Amino acid sequence: MSQSRPMNSKLSLFLLAWIGIFGLSTAFASLYYSDGLSSGSGFSNCWDLDYRYGREGFIVNNASTATQIVSDRKLNITGMPLINDGSYSYHMIWVGRCVKLTNLYGRRTFNASEYEPFGFELVRTSSRMWHGNSSGWPEDCGEVNIWLIEENNVKESNWHQLDNYIYFYEGMKYIWGTSSRWGYYKGAENRCFLTNVKRPDNKKADLTTGPYNLEYNYNGGAVNNNDVGIRITYDGSRVGFYVNPDPSDGNAYPNEYCYLRDTSFPITNNLRIMLGHANNGTFPTTQTWRAVYTNILIRTI
Image (tube, rainbow, N blue to C red):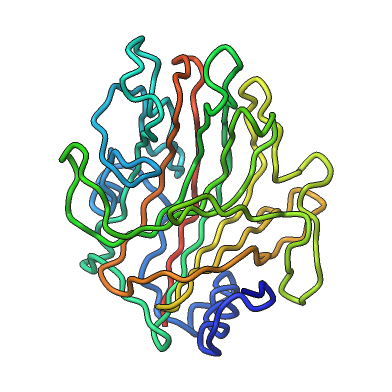
């Protein structure tokens, strides 16, 4: 598959251009959801907390320090989805915690098609990861992730598995070293290389240079407070992934969404969005994972 075209329909390309102007006008589209992430009922009426899904799409009701809180108009997902309880009972199993968008002013789920595509974007303002250590397991790993799932209305049934899902992630793994990698998961890891991304004018950019390198060095559990915009689009056939390396005009990168990759996805109805984090390994409780999100916008034609 060539990476030169993000999507496979003219209408989908129109959607991408149209979403990109949301800061200027709302006259060109139907705005289904714009979340400034206020605390209280404004959040709880739309989002449901503590969905326990990891990479394999299983619910695992394990011990965890993970929390999901809204403060200062930001969603803070932090803690350890899988902690070292001394038993190793969940080792080699991806364990996670997510929040799910369950209500869009009465609209419970999304559909997508060539003629009715949709897209959503958000800004991640902070993240923290840890790459494990050689005294544990070389495959120690974890990630922060953004999901598109087929809804199954199951929350607490242990070992229940999602039927269909895909998610975008930034992750760490001990065998990768101290720098993160970006990609999407669809039955396997699919890396998104950031050294030659496609800008809206078709020029190329390298997002791995300088102090705002998106493949961040999380050595020692460092905190990354560089803003990054994340966009996912779907036209009922292909899911597209984009990043904005400077959504707040705070660094030398362009403030624009750059295309990374796209891939097929089989489900067009009954779709929902989840935000979360997951890990696989016996990390100590002091090594928390973190993702902080704000400015969530969803649009459809």
